[in-house]
Length: 137
Image 1 (cartoon, helix red, strand yellow):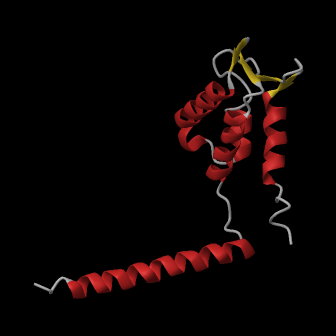
Image 2 (image 1 turned 180 degrees about the horizontal axis):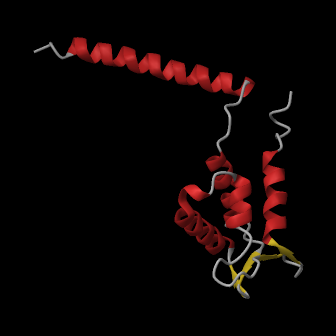
C-alpha cells in the first residue's frame, strides 16, 4: 500500500533539483545574458509594432491598426519561411513594402507625420537592442 511513497519521494527530489537549477541559472543570466536568436529579435520587433496603438500603418494607401499590422507581418513572415534568416532580412523583405504592388509601407504618427516603415523598424530595433539602465551596473 505504501509502495508509491518511495517513487514519489524520488520524484520530489528531482523536482527540487530541477527547480533549484532553474533559479540558479536565472540568477546567472543576469550576469551573462544568453545570446538572443534572430527569431527572437524579429518577434520582439513585431511585438513593438503591435504595441504602438498611437500609430497607423499604411499598406497600399489603406491605414491599419498596430494589431492588424503585426498580424500582417507575422503572416508574411510565415509565408517567407526559411528565406528570412536575420532581423535585417525581415526588415528588408517583409516589413518595407508590398510584395504584390511594390509600394512601400508607411508609418503615420499621431501628428500626421509619415515615415517609411523601414526607417521606423530600424529605429525601433536600435532602441530595443540597447541595454536598459536597469541591466547596467
